[in-house]
Amino acid sequence: MPSYDYPFNERIRTLLRVEDLFAKVLYNLEAGHEYHHHCALLTLLQILDVVDRAELKLDLLQELERQKTTMSLLIGNPAIAANTLETILKDIDIASNALRAEATKLGQSLRANEWLMSIKQRAGIPGGVCEFDVPSYHYWLGLGEARRRQDFESWLKPLLPMQQAIVIILHILRGSGATTKLVANNGAYQQMLGGAKPAQMLRIEVADDVACFPEVSANKYAINIRFNTLECSQKPQKYEEDVKFSLTLCNL
Image (cartoon, rainbow, N blue to C red; front, side, top):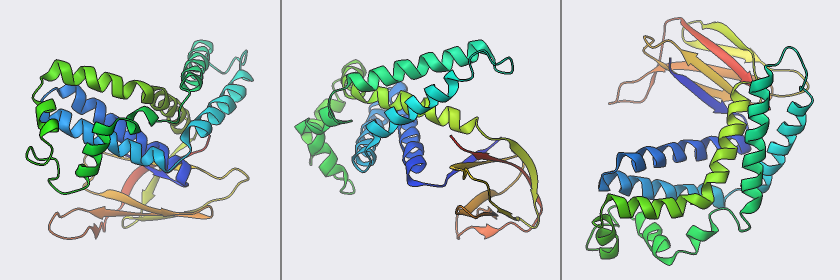
């Protein structure tokens, strides 16, 4: 069942972007071919751009500590699975300790790598990392899968604590809300929002056989969901039929 996450603030938007980019890095790294490793490296350099625009480390540490405090209050609650709670608290401790152990700014070791930064600079130019532009990069791609994996391991190591912290926080966020089954009449749905604690993200799920996708506009007062169809030769068009979907409003 396809699912769509829509963040309500820049903080959650950044976490979702890094999560998405990391997933692509790890997938292409695992695939092994030099073209996959080329995609993995360029995506890794995109992570640096996202991290540069946000003070992620302190924010992640504060959120992990807040979640630890909140969940510690649930110890002994008969309605909470003790083993699951213990596992989450242990994961939070591991992620927090790993983040604190990294003394420098997130990604600093990669920024200090002059060769990687030369690749990053050329990567902003269409076709800018061809072999005649950056022969050292072409040489590196030809060194073989084992050598490339070894280099990726050293480049990713200082970023993995950040990635693990983001995985934990987004897992808690996605599991935080109650899911409601709804219908978008003629492909459109609107809901007013209220309450003292505003949502930070919404999650939409639709059935596999529904030939449309949601586009969301939202603020702290209301959400508007419009389901569209996709024809790759023109811009998306409004889906005119009723759409059954599930909506989860998430908040840490």
